[in-house]
Image (cartoon, rainbow, N blue to C red):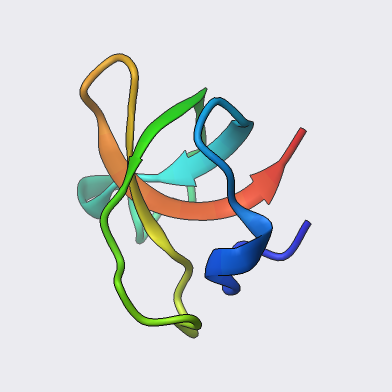
Length: 63
């Protein structure tokens, strides 16, 4: 799955996101998508989502 296309991301999907404070290190956080926050169909850094845990980050990979 490509995290840059909004159409690839579904609510309830398991994904890996990078949080704002982890962008330099590239540390990924695993979670389940609760909300899709990016409105545009594509975003070159990844679609921004909120996980069920409340964490907000950009999707880098799907499971």
